[in-house]
Length: 375
View 1 (spheres, rainbow, N blue to C red):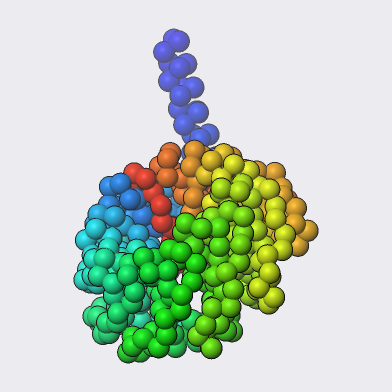
View 2: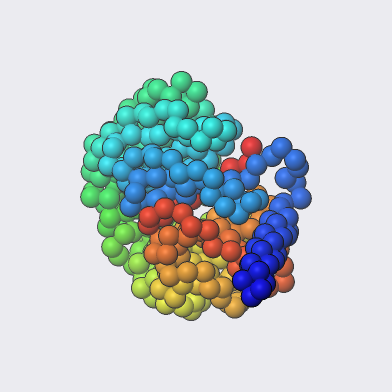
């Protein structure tokens, strides 16, 4: 008799759990996601060379795809139903068809690539091959390398300007930035910047670029039209990320070594406000209306919301052991956060007065990169 009651209890719990999961999934389903459309996340796992595909409506992994050792630079193609990324150990770019979850191309680009960028029209992809001191341009339709250019020593990132005319490359071992013609990849200028430059962001009008130093407490400001250094801004800590306001008016820089966030006025090239956030703020994602910045505190296992206009730090959201990369889904209803220590993808609902963690989804080993695609 007791065994029968236990079995009924287990069945009832299972049914309730399933109904609860369904309700959560329906609650999270964006209004624009009509029947037949899919909302998927793609998580690059650095330790096992895989890409985990997560259905964000069902809130569960649906595929694990081998992409090659050292996956990095995972990006959703802006116009094609594809996810692109790199194998830094294999020296190639890979292309995933999102409808079949199959790798449909591997394109040799040179040794040790880390990041890629697309042209505004999605026709070209640009990759800096750090181990080959080169930059390549790929035709996305034919998946063929159509141009090669030389950069400085150990080029880290190749970033295209918004007008699609210039490729800006940070050369980590040279302490320089190269400016290349986007069509031919011929060099037009080399600009000295702060030591070991890494990340790059460019203002919407294409007039200025901001380049982070990987070893000093500086961000370099470069004039992209006159092709010269304007300033090396002292921040009080090593910059971990560059997060640009959509209108280009402010730049937000998490500093894990200083436990806070610096705000730079991009018009005057001046360091303005500083906010204490936590133990190790290292990355962040800004809402489309620039109202809230969600900062990953990798030391405390938190996401820290910051009300940008009021410069107010809000109540942190616990997500895991070591959160890093985060991304908002289209519409901004859901914040996704990759946790590289617990091997999980955190799903946070943001369209409520108090953002809250919905669930943690298991992914591969040491996840790092993240992309989202609707198709």
